Length: 300
Image (tube, rainbow, N blue to C red; front, side):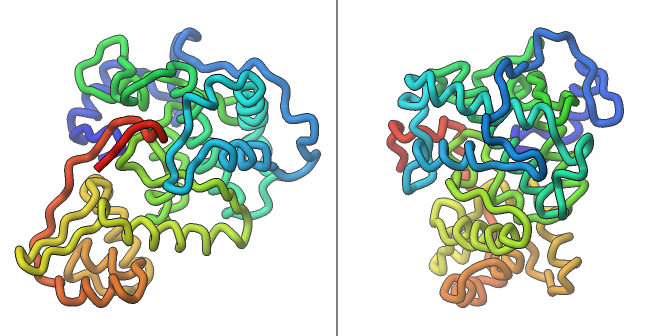
């Protein structure tokens, strides 16, 4: 399952029918490609890949709860241009066509994570105001979510990909680290929150660990009812259950209690102790809130 919350078999059938896919790149008509008409940042380094400009923008427009002030951002032509400038660099360079710019696998992973999030924001700002990413329609909208995640194409290192392909082919398949699900942001309230800091290299690993701990510590993502003997999880755990359980196996950790064991493995001590009492509880999944992660929107 992926972030569009569409049944796997239906996705396979729809993608086969609607899109022509070749080596992870989809062959499409030009009108579906989001082309960034901007120059790279004036201070973009000759070596490496800098996320500094995007980091500055996130520090300006992401609040303490990880939501985005899209309306304010949309009104700033300078900061729209700044995002385009960052994405111009994303469009030109990637670990595939410019491997020398990425010294480690962590640098490569950081590129794909942050550029994915940046294109999500770009797409929302382009259509602002927008109530939900699922309101972006595909030419043949059989299932909600196709337009935003499948039909749009974005340029990464001179190659075009859908957000679906970046998430699954470039990130999940290549890096196999379940913690990426706590950083990738799909522009919706039930997604992992956006964080202004964008670490690379050795600093990425503790960042992913912190993101995982913060995600499971949020009651909207993990709720334990000892009275009902139920653990209610964010639907991300349902969609990507295989990723989380495979992660446990790679780390040599027991997973007889399935997702509860995974959550405990990344949780802070207090929550881990609570989960130890819930090892045999029923696991349920909360309905996903697809409303835009906007600072103006009240959420319960």
